[in-house]
Amino acid sequence: MESQKMHLRHVMLRCFKKGNSAKDTADEIFTVYGSGTTTIRTVGNWFKKFRAGNFELKDEDRSGRPATTDTDIIKTVLIENPRYSVREIVDATNIPKTTVHKHLIKIGYRYEVWVPHLLTETGLMNRVSTCDLLLQ
Image (cartoon, rainbow, N blue to C red; front, top):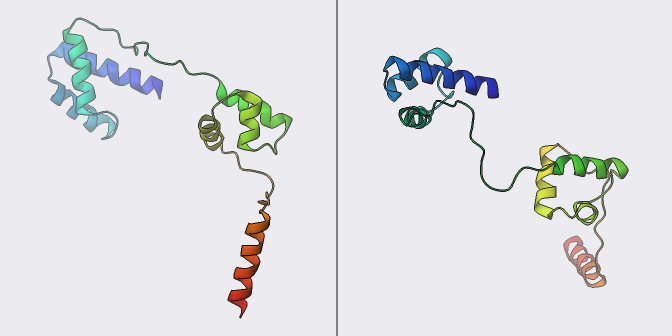
């Protein structure tokens, strides 16, 4: 994926140096590589950088929180005990619950055993009375 991005950026730079417009360049890319490979807006943004004298084709460092290896930490915890719930993983790793859940979905993790949900005495009585009513 990254090499395709770099290749398209080289194509954009070549077209820019030939004097093509951003729209013509995007149309040429669509013709050769198919639609969906880039957008006219992306080509325009790169042309704007080129006009400013910036011919660096690599992505600039992004501001914000750096990516961490949460997935590796979660996998390590699951290797120790594959029956951990999300809450138990949160307690073991101090990673936020939403992040743990997102990473579990991302790595395709499914809970290995059926977990019975415990009912309170009131909930159990409500369930029994509802079943009795439905059976009558």
